[in-house]
Amino acid sequence: MYPLIKKFLFKMDPEEMHHRTVSALKLADKAGGKALLRSMYQVDDESLAIDVCGIRFPNPVGLAAGYDKNAEVYHALSAMGFGFVEVGTITPVAQSGNEKPRLFRLVEDSAVINRMGFNNDGAEAVKRNLHHYETAGVPIGINIGKNKVTPNDEASSDYEKCLDILYSYGHYFVINISSPNTPNLRDLQEIESLKQLISSIQRKKAELESNGAAKKPIFLKVAPDMTDEHMRDVVHAAVDEGLSGIIATNTTLSRKGLASKAYVEEAGGLSGLPLKERSTAWIKEIYEEIGDQVPIIGVGGIFNGEDAYEKILAGASLIQVYTGMIYEGPGIVKSINTRLLELLKRDGFTNIKEAVGAGR
Image (cartoon, rainbow, N blue to C red; front, top):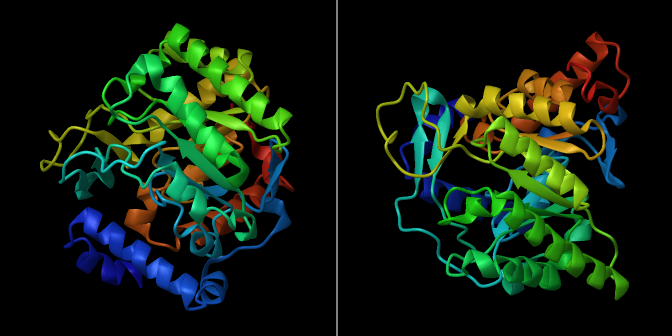
């Protein structure tokens, strides 16, 4: 049915449409609609289950950060068949984000430009929403960032505050320093700044765990707009400093090859189909650089099972969608998982883990 209603939905302002779908998911959660969502969208097959960083994922298809910013609907999203849900990006203090409009569809390119600016209700409010995260039935990741007003030389304190408040309320954490929509945030990817930031985060993690908190893996989300040399340095710094994994990649500032005429000059990060090849290439290069030292979560331009499988063969243990769901609808998870089962069988794999990096 989604192709029939998409024309109507796409006449709405993109951000308004997002708020309405979140409201609909809240209603489904309260009205007992999760059972219906499960019957419509879930694919249960052990061939898709995978252990990553000691966490069991029922399937490799997750929802990227940016959709459930305040951890309001992750239960309903898990019922839609996602193997995991990443909430956020969350900052220590609530902030409204950048001025509107700040979200744009590039329909001809199956893409989106956003400059949301980490709009969220703040870590304390999100903490309340995450009190029952363990009942979601799938792993819940927490993506954390710094407030816009926090200078870069004090950024580590914001990430530490988020960990202090939220560490007991998720299965894994993600350090977001790669969004292009917070001024100068990507400067934290410079190697010395990155090492100092990771070191301070690791000290906070060790402190929390020494006081009785369960161990949680921490991933670094990287930007696609670095040089090969810089990306290698960033990845090795993350591994050397003891982070648990890499998420590749965030949105891009590039506008190369776009067919759309409207909105291409808008500032912000581009996601969707134009990012597919770029993100897959980075996954392959990162996997070749670090092998299976730490897992990779692949994200960028995934619209179907072939796109997902391509990233898994390149080295991603898990993958995430977001823009693909905007264009393909809620059935995208079932479609991807169903096709992954067919592709695994075709290639003689009995489990998704066997396919990770097999195409390099």
